[in-house]
Length: 205
Image (cartoon, rainbow, N blue to C red; front, side):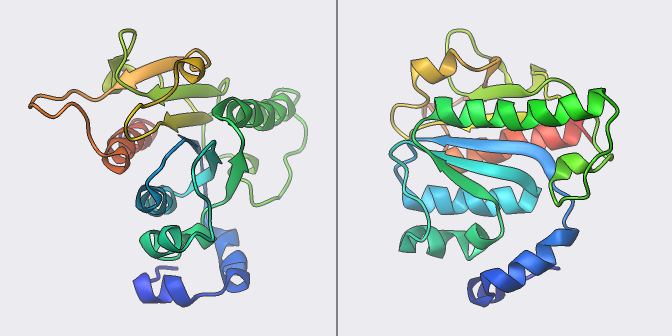
């Protein structure tokens, strides 16, 4: 099912729910910490849909759907991507680890996997311990191409001005950075998210 912008804006959530059952989701999670620009949040919904990620956590002071600007920028993909609001990135990380560790426990005990729409019920993706990767410029960061992107994985993206908080960075397994060779210090959060997430998908193909 491929819908253009008008079709995505017009499609009902009930119709989407039926059609999404056939999408094979990747065990990738986005955690958005205090993303202020609603157009960025909408754009991240579009990216999340393009990658067929499992879920997006919207945290802290970020706006959530049905904010009109998120709806506009996402061209309706907010109806397609599973998402959840959390008061903090810490809460989102705990939710991610809890959800994925329960799955891993079932797999490791060789129990029968459920037939739910969750990607983790499918056998197509190799899995390991859940990993949390923060995308941020930091003294301890490594080049984004050098990180361990084993599934299941959560990527944290931070505020457009201040980045990811130090408290949240301490909860990450690794911090990765995209090199900048010009005068500008950083990329737009959507661009950064696209660079890292498409790279991690490519190394897991």
